[in-house]
Length: 73
Image (cartoon, rainbow, N blue to C red; front, side, top):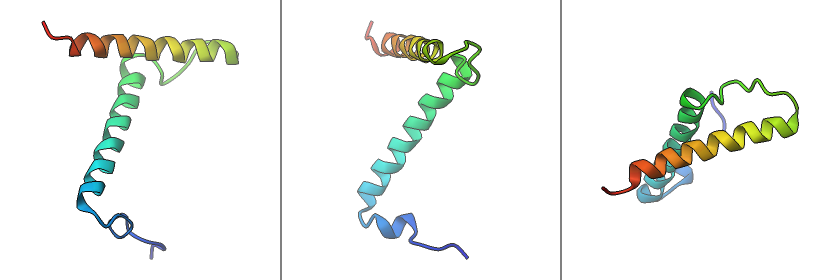
């Protein structure tokens, strides 16, 4: 049997529960897109500085593509 409180018990407001659920879904969708389309599932660059540059460039590319989709024509 599981211990502790259910999520519904911790969040009394249905509105807050929906906001938190949608926020988490959005975060997970962004991570999934970064892993699937921008190669963050596996980093082939060696060293911490190279790893940081790899992640930074992937996130910048994702954000540029995302903002390009938001731009009204």
